[in-house]
Structures are given as C-alpha cells and as structure tokens.
Length: 306
Image (cartoon, rainbow, N blue to C red; front, side):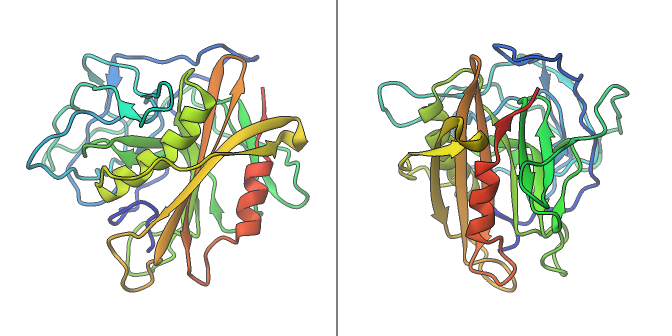
C-alpha cells in the first residue's frame, strides 16, 4: 500500500505553516482558535490541507448511510463556525469515546478554495540533529524536535493530512512524508509519514493509546479496533520516559506496489502541562519500507525544543 491509512492520497502542493510563530518557552496550553474550521472540494482520497490551528483527533457522531471522503485542498479556507476543542477524553481505563463536534462546512468540486499564504508563517523547520548524519526537524507548535534520516523524506513545514468526514476523525499535522512517489502510477503515493496529533492536556497514556486506535479506525472505518498496549520508551537522550503504543492493520487496497500492512506507532509525553503526541504511520512488507531500526531511532530522538 502506498498510502498509510487508507484510500489514495492525491498529491497536493506543499503549503507553508499558516500559524503565528509561538512565543519562546513552554506554555501550559497552545494557542487554539475554536472559531476556525476547514472546507474543501470533494475528491476521492485522503484529506490534505495546509497547516492551521486544527485540533487533534476527535470523531463526530456517526452518520448513517454516508461514507466520508478524504478531501484534497491546495490552499487554506477559513470558515466561521461553532468550534470545539477536538481531542480524546479517556477516563478510568475506559475505551476511548470521542466528544461530539459540529459537522464540517459543505464544499463542492465546482467551488475550489482560494489560495492563501500567511506572511508570518515560519518558513524553516530545521534544527541541529542529535543523531549523527541525520536531519533535525522541529514542530514549533509542539515545541518538539526529532531527527529523520538524511534522504528519502519530504520535510517542508505546514503539511496536514487526515480524515474529517468519516465517523472517526483524526488529523496529523506537520507531517513529514517518506518516499514520496513510491508508486509511480498513483499520485501522491508514499511509504509513510510522521507528525503530531493535538492532545491538549489529556493524560499521556490516553493520548498514546487513543491516537493509534483512532487512526486505524479512521483509516478502515471499523469501530471494533482494540486499544493497543502501552510501554515506556526513553527519549531525549534518556532524560524523558515517553509512553508508546503501536498496532498494525491491513489496508483495503493490496494490489500493485501497495504495502500488505501498515504500522501505526505513537509516543506521548508532557512538556509542562501540554501533552505532546507524536505519530508514525509506516508501510510494512515492501522492499522500500522504512526499517524498524530507523523508526526506533526517530522515536528515541524526540526532545523538547524551545
């Protein structure tokens, strides 16, 4: 499978980060605008749109008889709507139950969005790496850096992808994609991605387990996905113990150069009061898949970055 998480991902131009650069220092909660939401033109495939203060992972209530579409946007559209903070709430070890959110604004193929570019958006997401020979990447919103192998990655900032139309909604932002164009006959194909899901201030354990489960639910459309186990992993040179979960699923498309399975892994930890939730979605079982050793090195390289 060329698209970690589901049906084809149409290739879209990379958009810069549309946010204001956060102030230095750790904040107890990141700036969020509950009045902003997205719309786009209908297109079969994953949802891909430029970075904005879009809130993490949270499905809306089930809609019978309607299959969600993954929408591709080439630019930003801001819609004034009744907003809500989108994140998981898990209590007392219960299964994750998403808080309901307002439905997204309608869009049509005949009304594509206008282009927009934030003049104050940061153009560079590079920092010195901690892994010899690798490249350092930073998410300014999450105040977190990590390292990626020196080649094979699309690392421009501001890329967001996810599903906001199906029953189970999830968005990964500041996504870095691996082996873009892995399947030459499929536009936008790649072998994996890493990025962040907004987790606000929820418990670290809930974020680690909920992010993995929800991405698989969103990708497959199946509700009966078990909560994954969690384990501690050292990050930031061993100075922080993050919680990590992982699980694999079989994508609906298995022909051609698509991978037979996809592995979803999370790492969650606290920076001050804020929960940081890092997510990796990686193809498995293909000759050009990212190695497990490299995936573990990426996780271990996670670190706070002001």
